[in-house]
Image (cartoon, one colour):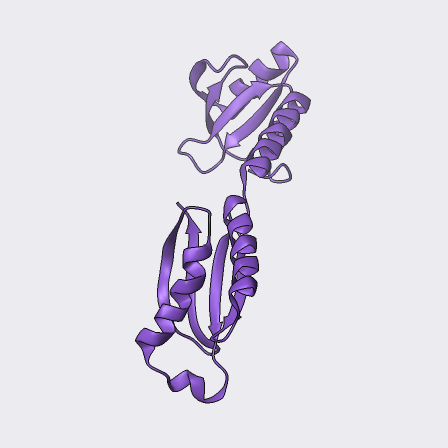
Length: 170
């Protein structure tokens, strides 16, 4: 819920509201005038919490406290969101063992961080038309060197560059 669209006091358009007090106890369905009078009596605001409900839900509480709570909830929700990137490792058919080990080590680090890793077996020129089993065996060479436990999210398949597979942490 965005803070800009929250209606308070006179901005509320509904004629009837389901009203909740500051402790969260339901006061039942009241007319807008009665609910507003109750809020004024307590020296608090009438805040429309759920405008799409039938009848809309309003809460009697301090608007400043409401805004503070909403910002706090948004901040907590933002920290829980985790961006998973797809990192890319590119190898060729003739890539040496040492280079494969270095690339596998980097892929293992990325997996440990929780990222997905796309492994591209780059096939220049005529090598694109080689036997698919031979190419998959070449792809398996680098997969064997990865130290982190992983599962294959997408099996090796032909792509524009050659052969691609995506792996992720188990």
